[in-house]
Amino acid sequence: MFSLKILIVEDDSVSALLLQRALEKNNHQIIGIADTGEMALDILEVNPADIVMMDINLAGDLDGIRTTEIVNEKYDIPVVYLSASSDAETLNKVVGTNPSAYVIKPFNIRELNMVIELAIFKDRKEKELQKLNNELEEKVKQRTAELYEANRELTKALEKEREISELKSRIVLNVSHGFKTPLTSILSSAQLLQVYAEKEHPFKQKIVKHGVKIENSVRALNNLLTSVLFFGKADENKMEYKPKKVFIGAFVKELIAGIKAGIENNVKVKVELGDLPKTITTDGELLYQVFDNLLSNATKYSKDGQEVIFKLRMDGNNLVGSVTDNGIGIPKSEQSQLFDRFFRAKNVGIVEGSGLGLSIVKKCIEVMKGEITFQSEPNKETVFQVSIPVT
Image (cartoon, rainbow, N blue to C red):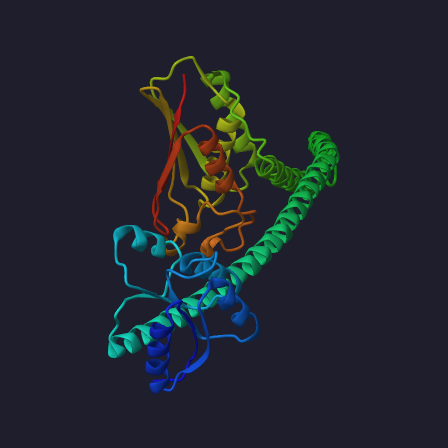
């Protein structure tokens, strides 16, 4: 057994002497014998101990229990109680001071040594645990401070990103609106050129050709700007559902007229209307965006002479529309990306496009609480169907 510095606190001199001899026989060093609590504290003040053997009943004003409380508070040394009493009242008082052990007199030397070893072991483990707890608390404090700082920096970064996003949106909206006016003027001029070319003119054919080219280019650029403006509003969470009365006949007529005006190949659009009411209540602008983009894609990616079929019908309180074409189709491996912004399938070839049309369709349908499905295979029939609640 390892050697310990031990203080004996015992008011019975015979018991103290017997205890001293027993402990010294096991190579322990007795730093002092005190018969009062006051004397024990004086000894510890100048001579530190590894463990204190404490009698409960002492001479003087401090009993063993009160002395132990002071030892625990000032020196944090393990204390082993020595007492001839084992009644419940005494044990309850002893437990309150968190002793390392309790030995009943008369004690057995072997048992006493075992108790001392266990007391030292318990004290060391408690101190190790306390040290680990302190280190853990320090790490938690440090980590909390780091997380707070990281969160503060993240908040700053998010705020900066929000400001940049708002600035970007304002720039996009302002620039887009700025382009709209001159584009309208260019479109009007191109249409006037075609009117003038109807008269006899040596360059009539070329004027018409370039006038149509200018008109189509302006329409394409205007559609692109419309798409940019649309997503500018969507990114700023300004997309709102604004239902109003829509006349179905006028809506379809305007829609098809716009589609036919933008067709650059020899593709026909066939319209099949089911049993429809004269008017419905929905967001006409969002509804137009949905079918305009679906029909534009269908005609753009169809071959000369092919037909695009546009169907519209009511199913309960839902307006159901479908667009069918037999154009280039969509590869299976790319269909999961179809509604992503700026995505264009690899088989589009040289056909121009921004990759925003179907993203706009998807967003509009989400705002209107509708659904969209499609079926497609390369060079086979492609069908897009939407179902939109209306009143």
